[in-house]
Length: 128
Image (tube, rainbow, N blue to C red; front, side, top):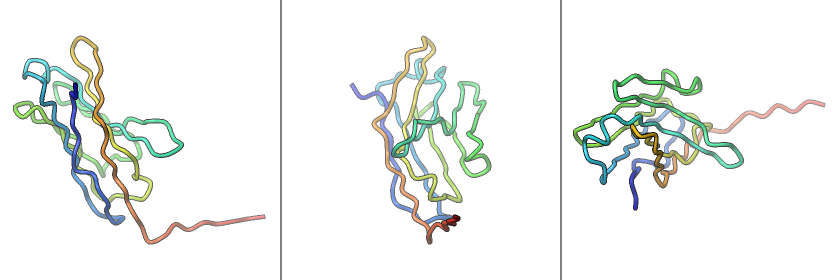
């Protein structure tokens, strides 16, 4: 049974913005509200990494690479979390996953949503 459903991914130019959403349609309020929710991402050849998290008391934590650009929020009444992503960079390209850790420590993942950021090119310096 699908517990978490992400949406909002897409293709965006570097410097642009996207807003990801994650809903927990099968959660009841008393399950969702105490949960710690988070966004993770994984790009090809790399390990999955935590991007941002938000506790039941709305304490947030961000990866250094996204601080000042991304904002995580939650709406318990709608059983949803969001990730506002601004000033996107090509290195933000990844599949973004919603994560839930419930009060009983059970963990759930969404299916993921692809975010692709295209830029004007990447400078490569070669030396010998």
